[in-house]
Amino acid sequence: MDFRRLPNLAALRAFEAAARHENFSRAADEIHLTHGAISHQVRALEEELGVALFIRNGKRISITPDGEQFAATIRQALQDLGNAAELLQTRNKQKRLGITALPSFAARWLSPRLGRFIEHFPDLEVSLQSSNHLTDYTRESIDIGIRFGLGNYPGMVSELLMGDYYYPVASPYFHGGQLPRTPAELASMQLLRCDREPWEPWFRAAGLDNEEPTGGLVFQDSSMLARAAVDGQGIALGRHIIVQSDIKAGLLQRLFTIDIPCEVAYYLVYPPNALLKPQVKAFREWLLNEIAEESRQM
Image 1: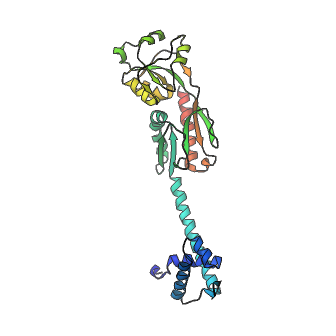
Image 2: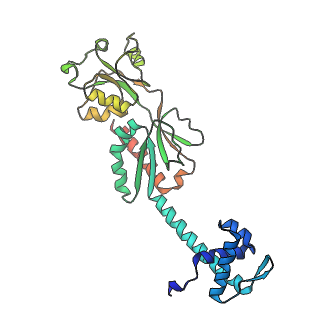
Image 3: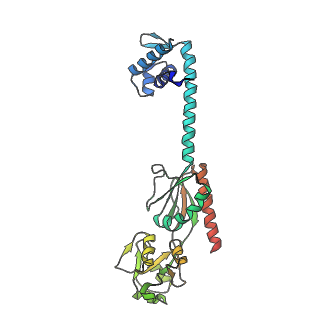
């Protein structure tokens, strides 16, 4: 078929709406045109086809038998176009996965492992966003998130992933390699601080009555705190999930065997219907397997 001989598609849509409503004004409101524009497009279509599609009686119109049959054909064609467009949109959405996580967790734990997930889904586009704040999943195109808190996220599904714990760490070269041999020696050392992770609870667990350190640089992000310790700026109270890779690489050294549990934990957070998307369900299963495998190796 020569598609150049097809009637104007805008006129076909205007006619279908007018035929369904049998009213030019309501058709105009539906497709955001004026009454005059609808009337003009329908009249041009009738002239092109050489067939009367409506009987006009003043401001009232009624569809002709030819017009009714033609409108049904157009309606089916428009429905097929709409279904095809929706299918493409759905497929496109299924090829994207939006993840949000805390910057420290995203950089130190999740990002180094995501390559293994992507190997199984090479056609999937994975967007990893990092933020310390709660995210508007719809506005920011997020499917699933990993948060560090108490697990109370109204309107969302919240699954406990794992807990964490703290212990002091330092670069092997800090203080000329002369690292403290007892917790008491920390009093004379440069202690790095994170504003949400105080030293005082660890001091108590170690049997010390030291007060919270003051002065010096205070970090808001655990990953930056660990980086400063790697650079030899001082001794950090490291969160295991964040510092374990640096310890394995020999960049940090754990000090003492004393640790304290975190009061909060890591949670997988997602909207109630999120697992209906295959990519979200696959990521959740992969993440749980990664955590289980790491627990077996500890």
